[in-house]
Amino acid sequence: MTIRTYEGKTAVVTGASGGIGAEIAKRLHAAGADVVLAARSVDKLETLAASIGPRAHAMALDVGDEADVRRFFAEARARFGDVDVLVNNAGFGLFERVVDATPEAFASMMNVNYFGVVRCTKAVLPRMLERRAGSVVNVASIAGKMGTAKSAGYSATKHAVLGFTNSLRQEIHGSGVHIMAVNPGPVSTGFFDIADPSGGYVNGVRWMMVTPERVAQETLRGLARRKAEVNVPSWLGVAAGASQALPIGLVNAFAARFLNLK
Image (cartoon, rainbow, N blue to C red; front, side):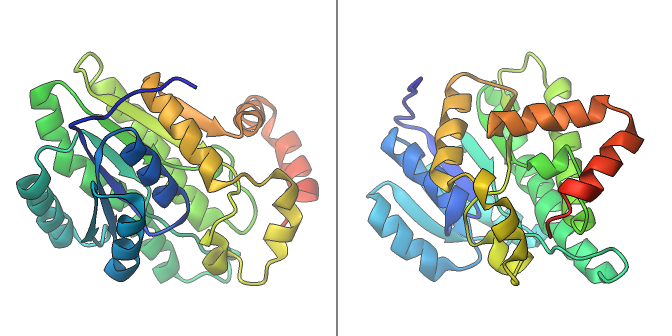
């Protein structure tokens, strides 16, 4: 594995109270960074920070609240200096048919999953551009490349994250700032406690699930190599790309028969 040191660097990881965020935070700390763990539940964060090490710090953050994002990053900069690595990982999903889902459910997911990424990125990007250095990692999803039944609201948020990420990367090309998307497939985390309380989807995709440790490992490898995008597992990224190249009618027929697992 390509190794990069983050000695003297400050990293912020949102949605860091468990799962992918916690594992990425652990690896950044192990690589030498001062890591700010951010989430709404500060009690969980403090316990996790204490278990990670002396350079892990817990700070409450609601990425769905513009004022709280401004407060958080002003305080983080005052305490730890400029942010060198931002990992936008906070998010959640609700798996429902469009006909059954409320407009509020769509709006809530978009506010956290997409606008949360926009808010946090805009909070650190000006200074990164001034310094001509820094990395922004947006944890999207394979669902941002290939929508499936009962995930219209969630998939739309991740499509938005990828559109934002790819457009931003073009805007700042040559600036020295690195923008990377991470697209996991199904991951064995607490995400599905909310998204799929029945457990039916998890049982259907358990064979292809990856661990948060693997996603974190691939994320750090992608950072070290300054990759534009990381798909975990990689074959799902290939499958998603192929689905975009095939006739939509064929893709829909296949998806309806084999991918409607929720």
